[in-house]
Length: 400
Ligand SMILES: Nc1ncnc2c1ncn2[C@@H]1O[C@H](COP(=O)(O)OP(=O)(O)O)[C@@H](O)[C@H]1O
Ligand SMILES: [Mg+2]
Image 1 (cartoon, rainbow, N blue to C red):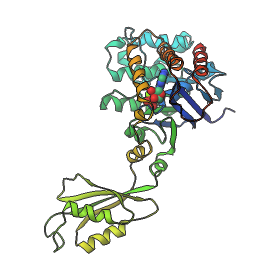
Image 2 (image 1 turned 90 degrees about the vertical axis):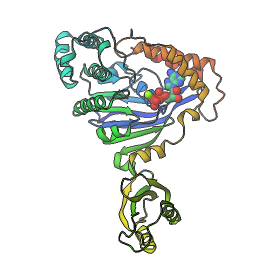
Image 3 (image 1 turned 135 degrees about the horizontal axis):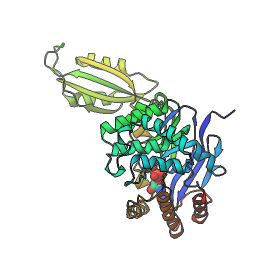
Image 4 (image 1 turned 180 degrees about the horizontal axis):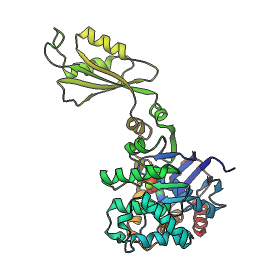
C-alpha cells in the first residue's frame, strides 16, 4: 500500500555560508492536494523545492517524495515528480516538439510512450497550435506552458512548480493557472508563489514560509484566522441632515473616537466614492466590537451606513506573518554579492531538460561562498560549517 503522504519535508535546514536559507522546515503534502507554498522573496521557497527535487542537499534534515528518500533513492524520486524550476531552462532554438521529445528522452521514455504522453501534455497545456514553433519566439505565457508540458511528459503523480506565473501578464497568469487547475485534478501539486490571489484561486491549503521557517500551514480559512484578529469596516454618512439633526463628523473626529474604543487597533481611513467616511480597524478574534461601535455612533448622533466584522484578509495575515525585510534580516552584503554573481552567470540556455547545468553553476558558486566566507554572522546554534556543506552539495551534484 503506497503511503498517502506524497511529499514530506522533515526538519530541513540549509545554509549557504552565513545565510540560513532554511531553518527546520517540516510539512507533508497528501495525495491529491494542491498546496500553495507562499512567502516573500528570499523566504526559502526555491531552496526547499530544489532539495525536494534532488538538485541540492540540505545541511540537515530529510525529505521524502512518493515515499522515497531524496538522497537514498533520487531516481525513484525524479521518476515520481515533474519540476518546473523558477527560471525554466528552455532551449530557445528548439521547436516545442523537439524540446518535449528531448525532455522525454532524458526521462527515458520510449517512442511509443512519448507519442501518447505528448498528445496528453499538449492537450492539457494548450500547445497544439505551437508544436512547430521555435521556443525563442514564444511569449512568456507560452513558454511557461511548454515548461509545464515538460514537467508532465512522464506523467508523474507529483508536480513541483516554482513560481509558475511570475513574469506573466494577467491574461497569461489566468491561463497558466487554468492549466494548473486542470493538471491538479488528478495530481499532487506544490506550487510556490508570492502572489496571494493565486493561492486563493488555486489552492485549498497554503504553507507560508518566512526567513526560512514555516510560519503557517493549513486550510486558507485557518490561516486567515491565524493572527487571532478580526477586521471591522464601517461607513459613516458625511452628508448634512442625513438621518440625524446633529452635524456630521469630520474624518478626524471619527478616527479619534474609534482610536479611543477599548480593544480597537490599527484604525485606518479607507477610500470610498460615497459621501461618507469609511474606516477599518482591527480587534481580537474572541471579542466583538460591533455593539460598541454602534453605541458610539448613537451617542455622537452619527449615521452609520454600514458595519462589518470580517476575518482578516489573507493579505493582512501574510504581511503580519512575514513582516520584516527578508533581505535586511539576512546579511545584505552577502546577498548582493550573490545576486551579482548569479547575474553574471548570464542566460545560458545550453542546459538540459531540468536545468541541471544552471543549478550546478549556482551550487558551484554557493560552494565558493562557503569556502571563502568566514562564518562571522553565525550567531546561533548549528554545528555544521561551510566545509561540510560543500561536501554535501558536491554529493548532491553527483546524483543523476
Ligand atoms: N546558491 C546560493 N548561494 C547562496 N545563497 C543562496 C543560494 N540560493 C539561495 N540563497 C539564499 O537563500 C535564501 C533563500 O532563497 P530562495 O530559496 O531562493 O528564496 P525564495 O525562492 O523564497 O525567493 C536567500 O537569502 C537567498 O539569497
Ligand atoms: Mg524562488
